[in-house]
Amino acid sequence: MSRSNIRDIAQRDLFTAEKQLKELYTSDEVAHVLRLREMYSWFISNPDSRDRQFIAQEKDRYGIGTTQAYADLAIVKMLLPLLSSASRDFHRYRANEMLLETYRMAKARKDTKTMERAAASYAKYNRVDLEDEQVLPYDMIVVQPFTATSDPTVLGLKPIPNLQQKIDKLLAKYRAETIDIEDIEYEEADLEETIYFPSNEETNG
Image (cartoon, rainbow, N blue to C red; front, side):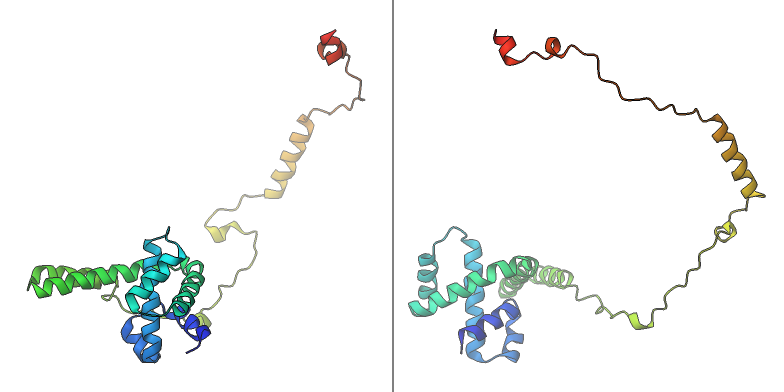
């Protein structure tokens, strides 16, 4: 199994359910993806860890060699920025794991009330009570035709009689009331700048 192959698989299906993984990949590939998933979770939980700690942890957990552990470390580091945008999927996966673990523990104790609550929470969280979303038939949507008009009745408004005449009358009125603007030439400001803005030499002198 090539490193590039398992990297691509992990990139696509790191949080895919184990049952589905077994339907898609070989047993070795599934085992490798599950190992990467666990080590990815460990890496997230231990953000300050060093590479050698990751290597030691994986070797201790899975009994693999140093070379393989370093190869997995490289894949996990490659996945981190890619999966940051999919952090919701990661937390959904962890939440489901906790709910299922709660259910298993309650079942072992024959605690039916807790089993029922865990099952209800799992169903609600994964929205299994809702029907699958239907793809909208975009090709069947008819674009609404629009035609430009100056007729206000299309909006339910009454038209103003002799509108253009009233507009012309108002324009003539406001033009007559407008004060003429007088243009003036630019003049130098009559300021004694040496008094108001003395230079450093004059100030220190």
